[in-house]
Amino acid sequence: MCSSDLEVLVLDEPANGLDPAGRDQVHRTLTRLAAEGVAVLLSSHRMDDLAVLCEEVTLLATGRVVFSGTLAKLATEVGELDHRLRVREADAVAALVADRRDVRLLGRAGEDTLLLHGSSQALEALVGRVLADGLGLLEFAPVVTPLEAAFRSLVDRGAEVDA
Image 1: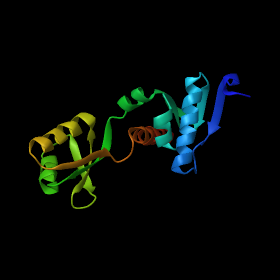
Image 2: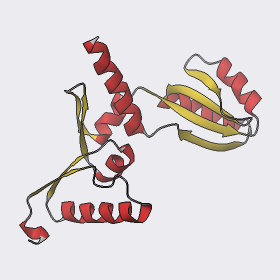
Image 3: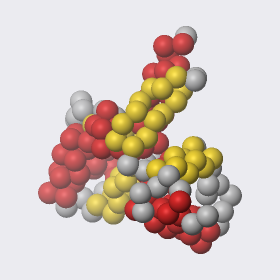
Image 4: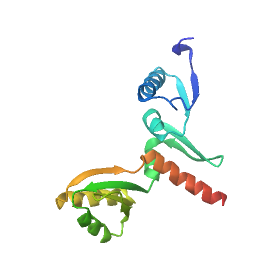
């Protein structure tokens, strides 16, 4: 059977346990099949694979659908994320955060790294201030991917409904 005969391909954890080269080969194959018009349905707990491969996701929590839609829609439903901010002047940035109500300092991960929680807009404004004040921005990144953060948030909400 060639791929042109396929209409739907259902896979469970297709890249689980593979080395990076094997994972990349699976991603290329699935991307090619989708481009050829094959409906590819994946079941996976690996958010990094889903973020790269999927246009739409359905998230389940305790046997219930807690979200179904595009990744863009999912990203808008996540109100706040945890981010890692590495700077040369961590104490000065921590003082900036202390003066804000829209960003919370969760802690530190080393001398130069702050863990922060806030909305995208609030964190963007803080980073702008760090840059404007010349406090030495080294890195700004989510602690987990936005897809994983959304999954955690929605699963937590689903668990609250069951409680």
